[in-house]
Length: 326
Image (spheres, helix red, strand yellow):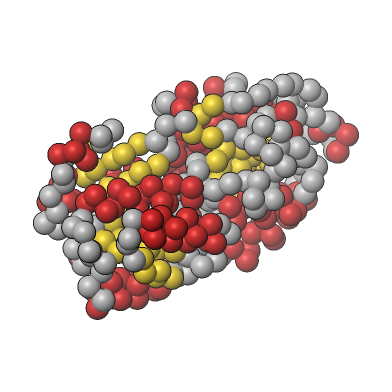
């Protein structure tokens, strides 16, 4: 894994007073709070455990992990994290972007929290600053929301000028205003009209693609969102059925059969979260661990998927691609 792609801006070490809170068992217990489900989070949990292993903590040997999954029912997150707080876990790692991270922060200001999110943790109130998070919360940002404008530019390179382009968004996503704002600004700058399609549920996604077909949308930007990650296979299949080129936030969509993605390595981020959790278990304060951000991003193209929908990739774009799946 290219862990060097995540840069730690500052560091430090000091004792975090777990013992002042409650007597800890011989084997530490951490909580994992997931917005989605275990079967859709295998890659993330594997990378997280690898990071913990690197820090000397092995699940089932000298560490126990308590799992809580919301199955995309964000309203259940407060009750789930309350169970972990009552359990007096030594730390909480959140999976599934902003919803689980915000729920964990709202539940406790004492138990250390390590998050992996798509957007800016400062703007949504998770931390005081990137370099000095403050309080009991730190983690990794994939900066996915900040890349929506760049994804639009790449999508424009895929399709002829004048093509109708839509963006698929979840209106319940915490960073929705920034997502739409950045894309609309970028679209205006290049003279591209953009159409927003909302999807809160699996059924909504099917409806959105029906609209794509009816309105003859020629290309689609799928915004970063944990719901869309969970329904990755469905979205990729619908894009293929309607023969609409779509760009996604991560490589995983392209491996599943999507045409193109641009973003940071999800596996690296969760590996980093595991390393941070291990440091906290060893006594480092969350406030001394700066939020990590990616320094490089992957452009991945699936040529087989492109060919299946009759899309020819320009040689200039292929030349800039980090990985081509054939």
